[in-house]
Image: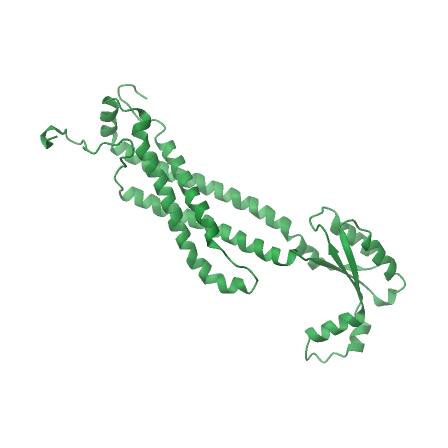
Length: 293
């Protein structure tokens, strides 16, 4: 085909099938914005991963301690039996004042505390092993039982045991935030591809006049949206590594091992799906002058 036969403003490289549109400044800007959004999502889920590992490191073998004054030795046996009768308590171990004093002396090395003085001051302790710390009324039952005997439960341990429920609620918020960001990313890609469609309206019109089906004209733009999203996902994953390497040493002290590899496929396919959705929205109506649709 000679150049004289090509009408003005018509690109001979017509869109259709797998013939992708040219990659311009608008696509680059969309790629950067979507990459930053996906990086934020990845960082959010890295934080959730760290929190889950930190909670799991001590929740696998959690214990609750109940304290009663040593002067109430006549009712300690009854308290032990009542605590053991709670359904979700697997075992109750009595820690004598002497054992607790030895442990405190080892912990407070150089504190100058005499063991016999500690024995007089320390309460009798019961260590409860639990079968299901997620049971709704477990801690209320332990607390009520302890109060009936004038004992006290370690509330700090109860709060830590219930962190799992809080983590579940935070997880729902993380999913909600990820969904909102996904919608925003889809709209950004949709707007970018819509501008590309408008810029190539004459070429699309010519393709439709030549008999091209709507799906044939839409395919390259959908592929472009998918590649934009997937490419942004890979870049976002690569940008997570400085975060992982930067805080990895500090996290290791808390027995947390961040693993960015598990986020590669979610970011890659998530970005691809978001990009495809945005492209489908942008090309929902490919304008055809002869049919006015």
